[in-house]
Length: 201
Image (tube, rainbow, N blue to C red; front, side, top):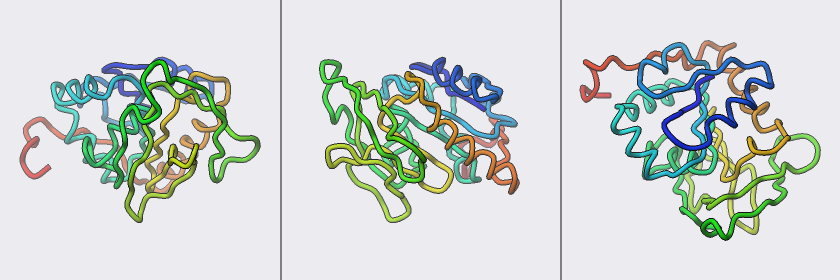
């Protein structure tokens, strides 16, 4: 499992994935994408992440992998990175800092469609919400009337940080998507060669 490690809370995702028995690799350059079964885009600061992705030439290979069916999970700023105004791999638009800045950070229970048991405890830090979305995006969770969790194909996006708590069900849900992709042979990760960047990719 790859975890984008340019900035933000990638280590918490690594710990959660490892606790579930998944191997992890920190992704910083296109070569780190080769052979991955799935990718997590963590929370952090979306502007800094955007600059880092552009600097390292990661945008086009990431979009290629998403188009091939590689499972991807984005949390908080990771949700923003997946939207139409950034990487464009999900048909949605996020409202940044929608719940407020640092002073408005809070925890709340969120019911996630398809998740068994009690609602998951979400940690919201300068959190976005999904302001609009297309017909292929399935809304999985809503808080105060705003969409905070969604899925499109094998891409899962949440506005909160589940990795900072003890509940691993969201990561289990994502690893189930990964297992499905592996079983069907979809999304085998191959980094786009540097010589091909900008040539129709």
